[in-house]
Length: 155
Image 1 (cartoon, rainbow, N blue to C red):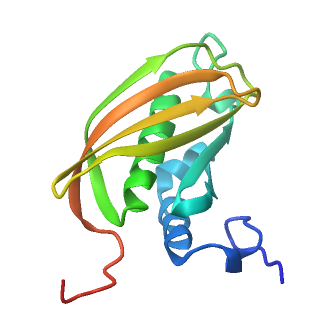
Image 2: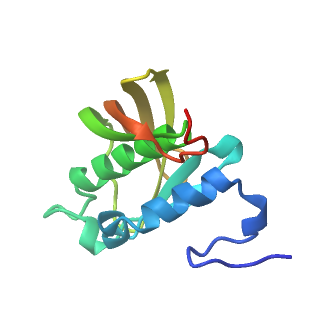
């Protein structure tokens, strides 16, 4: 039976508990909500972020502000860390911008973990457009605060 939850997602029963927790986590984040970033589930517990660039996301040149793109990359990489069941904060974030993102373009941010350590994690992210054009790439290091879901309190 298809259901729609408060995050606009269909078939919640098909999501893992971890995916549901990650989506709830980000939709309770005031800044992510303010920017209207949508968090979508992917196979393997991962998520991707989507944003249709509106006027509120642009700079004086009428293109997406770099800070919006960096926020998407940072959030996608943070979600990749959450998928490893780790809460993190950003230590360092670098972004390469390849192309200007025009208004009305839908940006999709994905990320993957490169290093999953006990105290730090390293990730990379790509931001692509609807035609699969790469607009930006980011790389970040995160400090591990602890487990995201404490499924074994004795551990």
